[in-house]
Length: 83
Length: 514
Image (tube, rainbow over all chains, first blue to last red; front, side, top):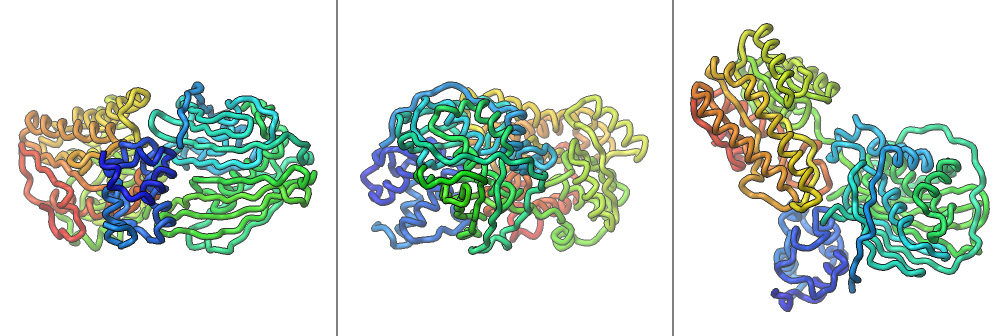
C-alpha cells in the first residue's frame, strides 16, 4: 500500500468524504475498493476536492478518475499539489 | 476516526409506509408514489422518501431523553419498497448518533445527529386538512440563485402522529414539531424547489434553542443559493419558523433530474440517408417504447420498413413513437405484450405472418430496470433475476421467430454493450446478461445458417435507465447507434455469420459502420 505517496491534503479530504481513517487512503484506493465509493460517493469526492483545492473538474473526465492515483495525477497536472 | 459499526437489524419499507409519509408530509412527489412516473426514472419503480429512511434509522436508535439539536442526513442511493436493508450503528450515545442504512456495500442513508438537554419546545397548532396539490416542475434554467419560496407549511396532524408511532420516534430525542420540520424539508424539495425533478441528496438541519421557539403554525422561507450545472446539483437554504419565531435553519441539496431527449427525428434524419431501402421488409423490435429500441424502430421506418414496436408497459411512449414516425416512408406499429412470455411470442408470430406475411428482422433491445449491485450475498438473488429476465427477453422471441427470419434470409440483432469488454464494478448482472445474449446469437447462427446475426456493443447511451447525474456524462445519443445499425442492416447480409459492431463503430466521428 503506497500510502506515503498520497499528499496529506488529498488523503484527508477523501478520508472525510468516505468516513475512514486517513491511513486507509492509498494510491490504489478507488471505486469498488472502498466502501461508499460508488457513483454518488465519487461525485461527493469530486465536489469536496474542488472545494479544497479551488479547481473544477471537467465533467467528461470525472467518470474515469476513479482511483486516488488518477485523482492525484490530475491535481498534479493542475499544479495544485506537488508532483 | 471511524468507529466500529454494529448491525442493528433489518429495515424494510412498504407502500403503505410511503403513503403514510406522503399524507403526513404532503409530499406527493410522483417519484415516490406513481409506478408510471417512476418507471421513466433510472430506478424503474417508486423510491422511498429519503427523510423517511432517516426517520426509520432514528426510531431504531437507543431511547434518549434529550432533544435534537442538529442533524445531517445524506441520501447517496435510492431505497426501494420491499427490499430489506441493514441498519449499522457506529455511535449511539445520549449526545450523539451516527447510523447508516446499507444494502450490502451500498450506502443508502447516512444520519449523524447531536442531542442536547431535554426541554419544553414549541407545540404545533392543530390545523385542518390542506388541499391536494401537484408537485412543481421547475427546470434547471428556472432555478437561479436568489429564487425564493415562502409558504405556511401544514403537515397532516393525524398522519404525523401515526407516522411517529409507526416509526417508534417517541422517546428518541425528537419532538413532534421537529419531525414536522424534517417533513417540511422533504415537502420543500419534493414539491416546491425543484419539485418533481428532485433527487434529494443532503439535508443539514440546526434547531434553535427550545426557549426561542413559539407555538402555532409552521412556515418556511427558502432561497436558492446555487445550481452546479455540470451535475444539476441544486443548493438552497431555508428558515423554518413556528408561530412566527425561528425554529430551525436548513441547508439542502438536491439533484435536478433532466429530461432524456425523446424526439430522435432530427438526429436520425441527419445521420441516415434518405431512402426506402427497406420498403416491403417487416421488422419486430423488442423493447421499442423508449431508448435505443425506439430509435432503432424509428430508423428502420425511415428506411421504409414496417416496424412492429414491441413494448410491455410503455403504451404512451409507444404511441408517441408511432406519431413521431408518421412522416416516414415506412411505419411503426405498436405491439403490446411481454416478449419474455412464450405464449405471447407465439401469438405475435401468428399475427405477424397473418397480417404481413413475413418477418425479415428481429431486434432484441429490451432490458429490465437496472440498478447497480455489488457481487455480494444479499444481491445475488437480484443478480440472478436480472440475468434471467434479460435472457428471457431475447431467447423467447428468438425461439419463436428465428425460423421466420431465416426463411427471408433476414437479420437478427442482439443489443449487447461495450461493458462486456470493459466491465466496471456494480454491474455484474448487466455484464453477465449481455454476455448471455451474445451467446444466444452465436448459437442462433449455427442453428439458423440462412439468417445473418449482428451483435452491437454500443458505449453508454443516454436513456431513462442511465439518466443519473454521473450516468449522463459522456453518454451517447441512441439515435447515433440506431443510424449505424440501420445503415448496416441495409447492406449485404452475411448468412450464418455473427457480425460484431464494437464500441468504436459508434463513435461520433465514424461515418459508416466498421
